[in-house]
Structures are given as structure tokens and as C-alpha cells.
Amino acid sequence: EKIIFSGAQPTGSLTLGNYIGAIQNWKALEQDYQCLYSIVDLHSLTVKHDAEAFRKQNLSFLVQYLACGLDPEKNIIFFQSHVPQHSELAWVLGCNTYMGELNRMTQFKEKSQKHQNNINAGLYTYPVLMAADILIYQTDVVPVGEDQKQHLELARDIAIRFNNAHGETFIVPEGHIPKVGAKIMSLQEPDKKMSKSDENLNSTIFLMDSEDVLLKKLKRSVTDSENRVSYNDEQPGIKNLMTIYSKLTGESIEEIQAKYEGKGYGIFKKEVAEVVVESIRPFKEKYEAYMNNLDYVEKIYQSGAERATEIAEITMKEVRNKIGLMPK
Ligand code: TYM
Image 1 (cartoon, helix red, strand yellow):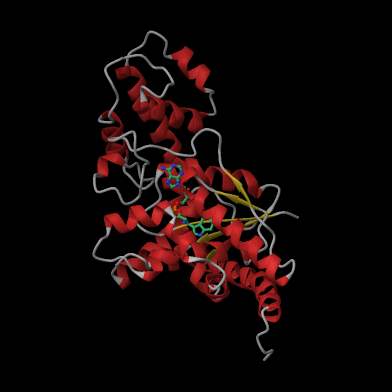
Image 2 (cartoon, rainbow, N blue to C red):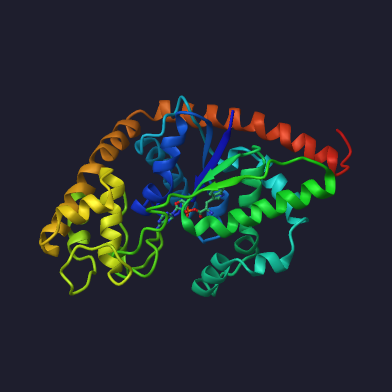
């Protein structure tokens, strides 16, 4: 059976970009494969945070995963920090990764540009921990958005290098990136990706946003003066809204274009907003239901950690042996 692994950082709260770029695919894959979906809490330590707020956010994130409809019986859903083999493998892989490779990571360059007062070593070696997340489970497929492509490529390179040096140890994973929706754009600057950490809150749709806020954000979203609902690079704001509409309704871009032929942006934006609100409504209901049943939620992540640890330890044993560490 194929193994699927993916994760999201519990920084802020899930966005519509996370949902369309990644989680929609996580859900699609759960039918046919053994999927592991992790809240990569250790990755979030690269930004400064308050411990108590972070603990709450971690729990909320797990509940947000469940509220997206991920099946807790089928999938292994867990906190990265509950499986210490991730960090252990990250050290080993770090010793098989060149600084030149990490220097090329565009996300590191962007993030260190943005947080000049906190360019820590964790931020720099972040992609190595991500490689460990993936390789420790002998993952075949990693469903992610466009922005993780480079990190995934590095994970593959590290796996191949390790296999060449020590003999076949890791499966070399493939990415699974959606054809449409792999990069949902900011509502305010449609040439930038929608991000959890955008300072302008109007740029980002959070799944936790109230209906009022959702409607307001979509109404204010930046478009252009063409007033023609058409899917092309000269109209990035409209293109983005069409993408969102298409991914949430399952209607093709052509169908949407035909439907709004001759109609202006006013009507289109209003209907996009309705689609978003309707799509998010069941999420909110599930979120509340799980939040009122935290005993069950706790069982989910405890059993997730147990099952994940079992798999991770098989790989880790082999790695320790292959690199010549003394058996206990
Ligand atoms: P993170 O937490 O930034 O995002 C989680 C997932 O959402 C996707 N995504 C988007 N997709 C489309 N449009 C957007 N605007 C958008 N923003 C985010 C991301 O591509 C990602 O799939 N480093 C990862 C977390 C991670 C991970 C891993 C992922 C750690 N270890 C192992 C896969 C496998 C990250 O920061 O994702």
C-alpha cells in the first residue's frame, strides 16, 4: 500500500490556500492509501511565540484538520513532536546536506528577509527536518501546494544521496501538486501567495473567519477595471477568484467563464463570497462539534502518535544500523 505524508505548520490558523492547495488532496487520497497527516509543531518553533498561546493553537489546529473532514479512523493524524524520530533523523540527514543546497532555498531567503531580527539556525535547517518528516515513513507521495516544490526536491536529493552512500534505505518520494489551485493568491495583492502570516488580514481567508468577515474580505478583494470574468494572467485577481470558485464547486473554469459572460464583477464577487461561505459552513459546525468532544480528540492524536512512532522506528533502526551507530 502506498504511503502518503503531509503536514502544515500550526502558525496562525488554516487558510483557504492551505485547504485548496493541500488539504483537499489529503482528503481525496485518504480513500485509497495509508495517509499520515501531521501538525508540524517543531517547524513552528522557528518563529518566536508565547508557550500557552502556542499550546492552544496546536490543539485548535488539530481540530481544524478534523473539521476539514479528514477521517480520523482512516488517517494517522498526529503532532510531529510526539514522534521524536523526526528530530533524530533530521540530525542524520543534516550531516548529508550541503550548506550550498540550503542557501538556495527561496523560502529561507524570503523568511530571513522578513524576520531580520530572528534569522535562527532552525529557519535555515527547516527543509532538513521536512525531509526527515517525509523519509521517516517511507513516503511514496507528498500532497502539497506549489510553494513546497523546492523543499520536496531537496528531500528527494537527500534520499538519493543517502541511498547511494549507504545502500537502499529510503523511498524517493513524489510530489502531488494540484493542476489548478496549487497557489491561491492574496486577495489584496494577487501577485503574491495567500499566506497565514500576511500582516494585511484582508489578504487572507481563514477557515475560522466569521461569515461577516468572509463577505467583507471578498467584497474588498482587489481586481481590475476590465469588468470581464475571464481567466488570464493579465487579470490575476479575477483569475484567483475563478480558481477558488472552481475548486470549491467542482465547476470547470470554462463553465464559470460561460456562466458570468456579460455579467460584471459585482455579481461575480457576490457569488464567489456565497460559495466560500457555504463551503466553510460545515467546517465551522464540525469544528464546534469536535471542540465539545475533546476526549475523543485526545484519543485521535494519541493513537496517531503511537501508530506513527511504530512506523518511524522501523526506518530509524535501519538508519542507525546503516550509518554504524552501536546497537543499545
Ligand atoms: P504550510 O504550513 O505553509 O502550508 C501547508 C500546506 O498548504 C499549502 N499552501 C498553499 N497552497 C496553495 N495556495 C496557497 N496560498 C498556499 N499556502 C500554503 C502548502 O504548500 C502546504 O502544502 N513546510 C511546510 C510544512 C511541512 C511539510 C512537511 C509539508 C513540514 N514538513 C512534510 C509536507 C511534507 C509548510 O510550511 O507548509
